[in-house]
Length: 362
Image 1: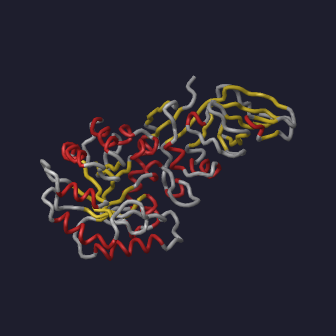
Image 2 (image 1 turned 135 degrees about the vertical axis):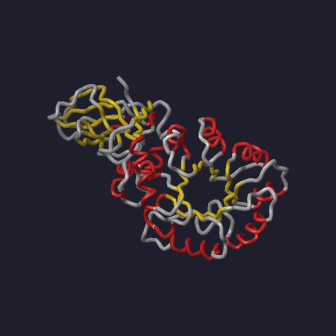
Image 3 (image 1 turned 60 degrees about the vertical axis):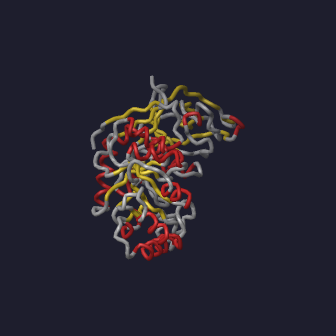
């Protein structure tokens, strides 16, 4: 009997990519695959994104893993390179790099390279993480255009900080800053992450960078993927491994943080923070057994969670499958119960969980 399992629905993945392309029909798609494709499996996911125009990862080792897996599409390094010694690796593997600071630019200008680099110039319009300052833009742009080591067809990029909140003025301000800087430049532009794709269609530009939404999860505040016409790609499941009857007043789990108010039954399920399930999920966080929701009770342990199934009128038995999140239970909802975000839950699934890649019917 297989216990903790992440079922990855490749049909849903393909469906979501089609949905994304329909939302931004004039834009090319840079599919974001960083952090092991948001916990879904880097190479496997990439191999089923044939209609993406490029891939994006955070670091060189992720990009090298894609090349080793036979992927030939353009790959963009979202954090750029970190050392002059990385540049031959970029050239040899046809990686594209973000440029976001002076050190990177100087390294390119002063290196002996066998070919020209494909470069994305990133401007910090308000995220205040990576990116050159707006007042540096023109100088960086001219230096890149005049550098023999750089492909003259550079591209221009920024990143939104609050696009998940359509009531925030920040995204509009960022767009205005970016457009003011690049207004007279002919290069391709890329602004929209998943939240930009969904909430700010005027930001779509020449390229979009869908990440979370590609996996069927909403990047927007207080929304879930199906509200945008997306389908969850990951279904995290396990099994009931024991059923216990406890009396009224009994405390459950480490620290006795939940106490039964009446005689009840508990289903013990083989899932815990050792599998990546959030330890701080509160009492009542739902799971699905036999198409019905039940709430977890007591502390999440390393390997087990207890679920209050009441007097068990549905005949729940050892071996029954339990959906921890998936089509019947949005991961966004579980994240809210744990005081975190769905990105973290997906990325935290541990190697102990078995992965099954499935082509399921629509």
